[in-house]
Length: 304
Image (cartoon, rainbow, N blue to C red; front, side, top):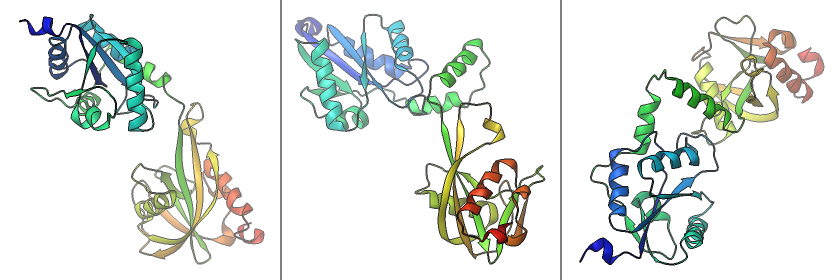
């Protein structure tokens, strides 16, 4: 007896993300394999609440159209990401029953993704491609290509407008050595600045960011890190942009090491507190001077 006819009432449900610019051989093989076993196949695409990330660069509509162009008979639906595996499983089961109120259902998904997360009521089968192709590697390879087509330029513009406006979080630090403050100067700049930089995903705290930046730019260790305050920095690079920079400003004491410029710093200088004025700093760091002054960590007459 024909296997497909024997399971004519069965419904296959595929769960995946398909975050690629085009379906690769592995995707096509898996979908065709499920379609060969069931009269009806529904595909749920995971949808992240985070817009345009490295893991989830494409929106639901663009991925749906990509899949439908190759498999027009498929029903493609959205499955939103939620906080926990239990909540996600309940959401999936509810969505399945909404669109498939009757029928014997089999779920299909990758072991390291769907199978490990699913806690619901339906049986599940692992999708095992003959040739495994990593979506992450596909996206990395694309990011290394230089593309010049009109569609590519349109896609870049689309991505730029379809994401949240960003706030880049940075730290700046007034490093004190005795009665001197350590200032830095970048190449092609005539004015000074506080040591600092952007927080990175591997930093465990903003204090950790401060330590890393001081090591990177001045080759020294610091101690007694004190938070002073935060403010938006009027960085010239972002004055006309919707994205902005907020700096968390700290004070710290020199602990050990030979002070030496490194990374993107060309010169370092210890400035006596009584000689330190806002006019010595680049424009975007002058409000930080005022913030430092207002904390009363130094006497007014000392800072000038």
